[in-house]
Length: 82
Image (cartoon, rainbow, N blue to C red; front, side):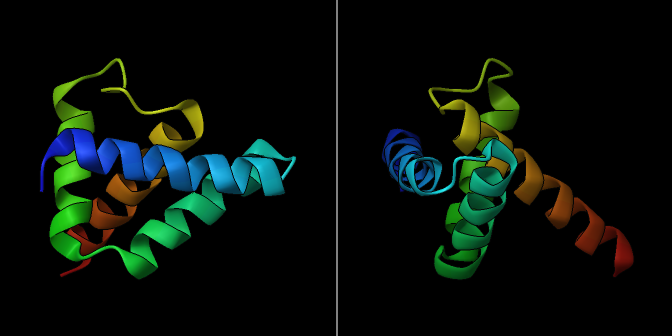
């Protein structure tokens, strides 16, 4: 899937959770959980790679960027545990 489409989707999900959760940390957590639960592993890998390639965020909103950072940390921890 194209990176710009994943960015758009992640931003939409983050916007939804940001409007329904006034606490930014809760919005980030809910966004990361949604991406983990409902996105295909390939989609998660691609959005993580996209963020890694562009340290400025690659078009992701703050909540979406922090959620992807959280996904990346979880993925790295899981890989290290194996």
